[in-house]
Image (spheres, helix red, strand yellow):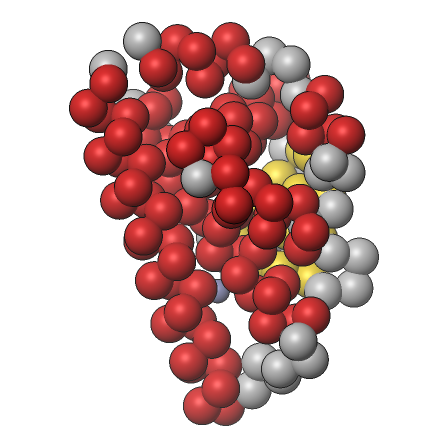
Length: 154
Ligand SMILES: [Zn+2]
């Protein structure tokens, strides 16, 4: 049931546009372009419902989400506050629900990189390893939280 609500809400991305988040798909196939953007809107909707603090963090650190196979999985570019997601790396065998949860967690990971960038902490050497570990643990935390909440209601 909750999943259905998330889906419906995701049809109206204006709330996130008002927050200043734009989604640009660099995918070429017509169908994939709209479904990839929709999946990202749905991921933001899920976060908005269950961990609104994370959505505020994302809105502060990310202005544009580029979807395209130009990075391994995800990347954060501080200049321009750009997040790049390669949705092709999320297994197609996953259910739509699992894909959207994985995308939501990935957005949190990249936005966490943005927090360190804003603090002027360089992504170098041992610091890079520590930053990556923190981003990954935030990603896992959100993934587990969403997985719990969405499963228990559906
Ligand atoms: Zn990372």
